[in-house]
Image 1 (tube, rainbow, N blue to C red):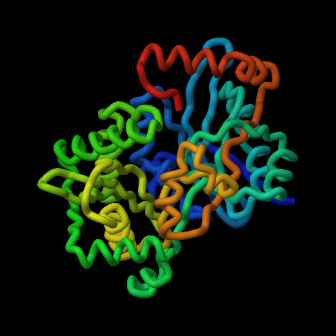
Image 2 (cartoon, rainbow, N blue to C red):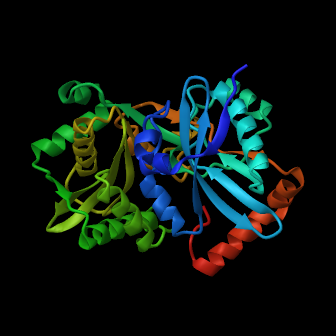
Length: 357
């Protein structure tokens, strides 16, 4: 029977955290990174660094921790655990349960969010391990993924025809993509485009600017982030921030003016980012968020427009299993689900004006 043990990472391992995370079976995830941990530390979470050791590999995972009166500690394995196979998760959860109990960490529940493709078999394995399906949190629990291993000319030919034609027309018409340094002005410009897009699409409200400034700066300072802009009449009309983390690249943030004349400008920004990420060694490009595959053509879905744009590069939408909770204390977890989570989320938002997760 497969067995794992769980432990906190050593100081030496934390010092080389990103190197270890991208060596995980699935190559890690930018939301498990050192840069992201540093941001969340300033927004109500305590980062913990946990290693699962098995017979064939060690998986390094970022854990975000919050403490609550009466309940104890809540752990969120954001985009983790990273596993070679979904069948390894039950053994990891057994190890995590034993570790938190032996170390007297007072953790009442653990939320996991593995990058495991959704399937009836995966659901059966997770539920059989005592995991409870809960609402998903991250936009790329359903997403468009593009294999970017072919050389550029071949890759362009392989794109969905809508995306390929838009890229080529923008190139013919002289649209220019500008790579920008991570200055305050650059960040403000992208944030304004994002706010305008959120408002136009009725997609809610963006987090405060300082959150994005810390996020973008953290990845840029580590050589893991790049800003891209297209200008029209001297002002930014389309902007994007793309992250290269190991073998994966992610279109994390973007926005655009709703009325603009240059056709294919947003497609050309993505194409510029894709070819840059290829040169940096990325093998996969994550467009970071679409409707679920079974609602891709549903015009009432809030991400319908984004889904149409992103699937103009690749027809494939990947649905991951999303979030599951592991109750470690049944009584305290019941209090959490009945009222605790809702109450603490409301209190945190009222006190800080920020999102809880």
